[in-house]
Structures are given as C-alpha cells and as structure tokens.
Length: 90
Image (cartoon, rainbow, N blue to C red):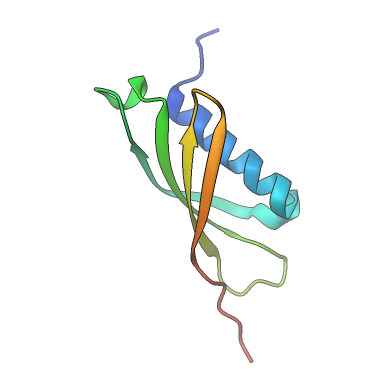
C-alpha cells in the first residue's frame, strides 16, 4: 500500500484539530479552499503547509466559517486563525 502524500497528511491533521475543538458535528461540510506548501522544493517534499478551509461550525449556522491552519508535519503541530465570522440572520 503506498504511503500517504504530505498534502493529504496536512489536511487530515488540520481537520482532526478542528474536530477536537468543535466536535465532529461542528465540522459539517469541511472544505479545503486552498492548500499551499510553505517549504520544500516541490509540494510533496514540503513538511509545512498552509491550509485555508471552511466549514459550518453548528447545525444552525447560516454560513460557513473560514480558517487558516498552518500545519507542521515535522512535529505534528497546527496553528489556527479564524479568517471570517459566521453571518447570522436576525
């Protein structure tokens, strides 16, 4: 069985962190909007990735929240920053 690519590993690690924070129902419709290698000559050699993703944080969310996750596969760390707030209807 072939080994998993670094880019897939970065996405999985980022999603795992969001599921830990928000619960698996809090990561509804998880979508990767952008995936960029931060170091390495080519994407597959990179061990650091910037993952821009969006998902609905709750069942009642009217719009997805967007986050930036900086993933370091060398030490399995993820730094997250919220890029946009969920819009609420009044």
